[in-house]
Image 1 (cartoon, one colour):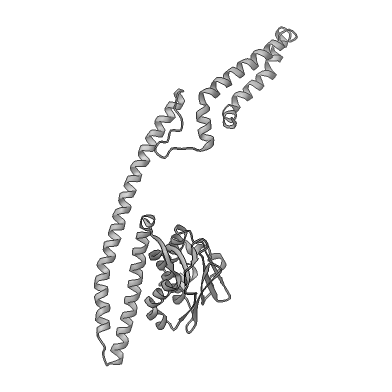
Image 2 (image 1 turned 180 degrees about the horizontal axis):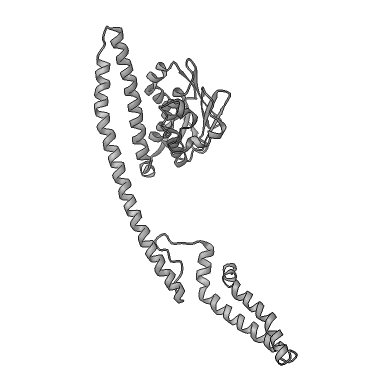
Length: 331
């Protein structure tokens, strides 16, 4: 009803002006005493009849617009009857056809892009794995040669991490189709990730301190939770101080990952979750890609695990809230 009145506001104003101006004209021509009530009656009657018929004709349109019930398969929200409505309906059909065609093109492009990224990453990982095996199988006695091999190994690890991150980013677009919610022991996942990153911890002289009970059980997706923890721990090592510790503990249904290092400016706390945003650290550390925390936020949002990031006094803490997905495993 409100939209109907707004649609006819100009008509109502016109009638108000009529009520004011016509009596003046009638009074000057023939006197208003005998004609004014009759004029008021006719004006109100005709206005009421006109508004009634227009309202009945467009009632469905107004109700659908008010309730915002737009069918995703059709832009039309009412059956057009007036010529102007039919004209708008034809235009909407054309817009719908255009947008649907663009949507199909975008889906095809996205699928081709994901396929290309996946194939490229797998093709690059094969020779990279061969290089890593060659490095592991060679143990030169020459200290200088050994040092060079260690440098090559370090660069290979960086490249492998970046490739895995790129592949994860590509797969995250279809994350919902790949979810498998199951019971997971949080400590086991944490130990697996730490073992995967043990060389990185040793290399950077940073050591993990884990305080998680053995019976903490959460219901989530094992693969994607492991991706999140891997990314957070690698960030904690990458930006942590030498000879410090990454403290990992769980309490009150929340997982805390804390490291000592350069403080993230308060103005960047929310922006670090944006795709490709690297901030101040991205200018000082060329390794920053701006993908990691974006993936973390996206995965945790999909899994319905809220997260927060705090940074002050050279200490950064990432908190994941597992409320609603935590249980105590039977001992």
